[in-house]
Image (cartoon, rainbow, N blue to C red; front, side):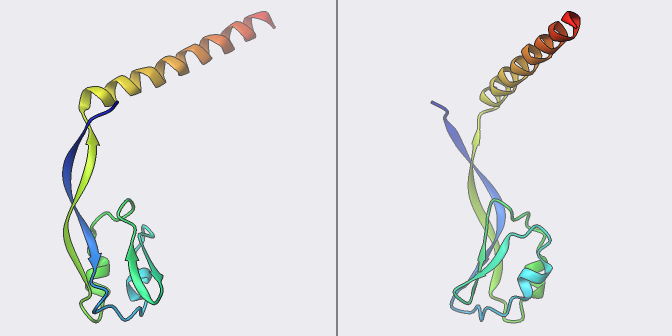
Length: 103
C-alpha cells in the first residue's frame, strides 16, 4: 500500500456567497479548470495551475487563491513504479525485435 504525504499547493477557490455565475472566469481559464454549475463557478483543483487569471477576471472578487493539500507519493515509490513501467516497455521492445528477426 502506498503512503502519501500532504503537499500544499496554491489553488483558486470560489466564494459561492459572492459568485454571481457570470462566467468571466471560465473565459480566461486556459486550462479549463473552472466551470459554471448551478449558476456558480466551480474549480477543478486537479487542473488549476494557480495562474490567477480567474481572480483578476472576477468582477465580484469571488475567487481567491488559497493553499490546497495534495497527497504526493514518496520519491522511492514513484521511482519504483517508473522502473516497473520501463521494464514492461523493454519486454515489449524485445518481443518486437524477436518478431522482426523471424521475418
